[in-house]
Length: 392
Image (cartoon, rainbow, N blue to C red; front, side, top):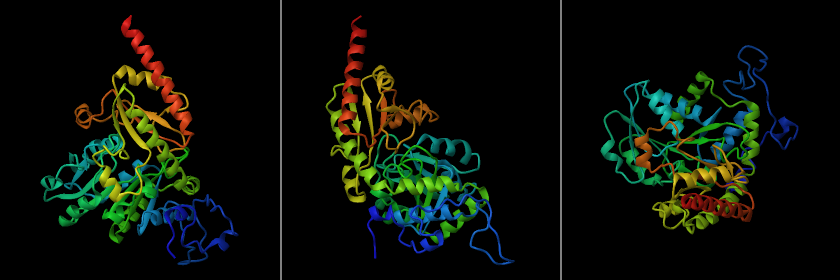
């Protein structure tokens, strides 16, 4: 019997081996590097934890189930997942990538992948016709939706049709929405990426990354790569992710509810010149989100009237914490130009609208009144301080 995604976060559908673990409700941490063999050619199914570990395997089955994939692989970080994925390409291959990507992805492409002979065309995949950038050696299209940090939304199903027309892979980073709100494989993507550090873990206490696919040939390649590079997630970190995913549904719902109210609050502030949140009806990707997702997530970006205002906000917040990362139970505010996108070339930042006045919020699950009261206080004190300074 098919289960809802909320239930699948808590119960793996093929949990038929509880007896093996003495009936334990919490899946055991198999903190071992190697495994005993009864004889030549006789194996328990596990040989060495770089290849596979029972705790990691259990987590991977959960992620594959949530993303409707045939296989999922758990990595030590989100970037190790992307780096391992790039190993399926060879020198001379070309990829079309979205302009507005996480800065770490851009850094990897510009400094590692290009060195390895892979070329890239960067464009706004949400609005450009990518057909005009496809060449004979193009192998894949790589996107985030929504993008980081400007929250651009791409129609995954439409882009998938183009990718299939030209026999290209469609790779989608689904970190911002998590499998709870969006399933790119069901919309035609071939590979889904997650930084498991974010919503899947949910507590800012471990690093992880995932690759999920719906294709046997890609799964086979990735399994070979993770075995060879040794980038697999450790047993204890795998257990932390299993535990975090159990509350994914309720965390995503609460965080989204808070994000909607904060976005609406920000829209009414004179000091705010732009609010970018796909759950607002004025967002250009709102209708696409309604078609392809079950929610809008809890990430939002906003622009204030000056750099000075932005810096003052970052210095004054307390309950809302000035920190990199996202997707935890705590609300975090980030300054993209010096944090997540510090290594992105200035011309790209400008094209994407990432200025010194832009702030990014990862909305957590605190009481909404407490969050709004803090924002009200910070904005009021910042306004008074800057106004007083201008007068003097």
